[in-house]
Length: 346
Image 1 (cartoon, rainbow, N blue to C red):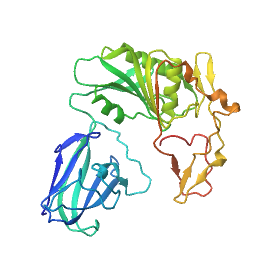
Image 2: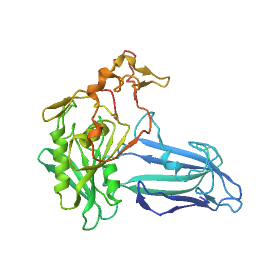
Image 3: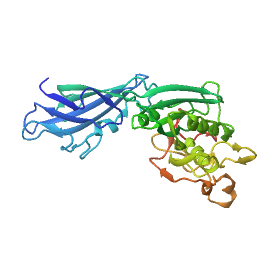
Image 4: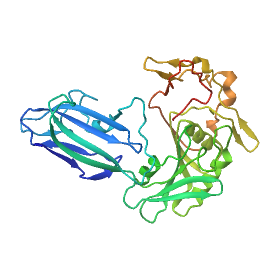
């Protein structure tokens, strides 16, 4: 191997930390391909590649050199990481065990054909999810099933409750990374985990109120309020929490609806019905995806107003983020009939 791949920071860094990738020891103007690969916890392979040309000194710095093609083009210093795609179509890269890192292998190949080129150099970048000193504490208090991540230091720290969507279970990777930035974060499960309900049929807001109270009573959490972060179904739950519960200072939601979705929401003597849908409006794309974008009825139309979450009752600000559409892969049957619960993340 004739080339040297350097990483800054070298060795291990956080998953959300930028890394500077550079190559030295090439010929002036030499065409090369950089390839990144990662195997997830189920040993599934994710890869990305990009074509470059070395500068007049035989060097290549991804902060200054634009990609000429491949998985992306243009000046993208972290493109080899954000462009990772599964070798098997439509798999999703998910980190379940935040106590172990993902390992990314970076290779430099001669020429612009990544499959048949000579290997010139390589490096390994371990990307972890727990910053030094971050504490991970499982929470089994009352009905609450969660994991609390605390930053290093004495605190108290601003608190966040982190909710994911209709896939259920307990997802910790976002909470663990946020703790590395100074937040006390509760990754909260609400179904399909341990002794919690297996299915999302009815949702009681008192469960989430108990989680908020747990955070506000914790000695490491700075009161008198906490923030909320939710994705998909977890997003509209966060909107409901902000609208009805005390002690919420701000709410950020990703790909969430302003109406209650999937299951009726109960709180004390109140019920917000779930937004109705028409599964017959699904579409199948050319690549075999089940697109559910159009199955939901419009919550702003009068017949659906009862499902709207009363955001006007909230005391803090909102941040709404939309990142992409959602699709499901067909399971090989052309007779697949979508069900009402085919929504959100998987």
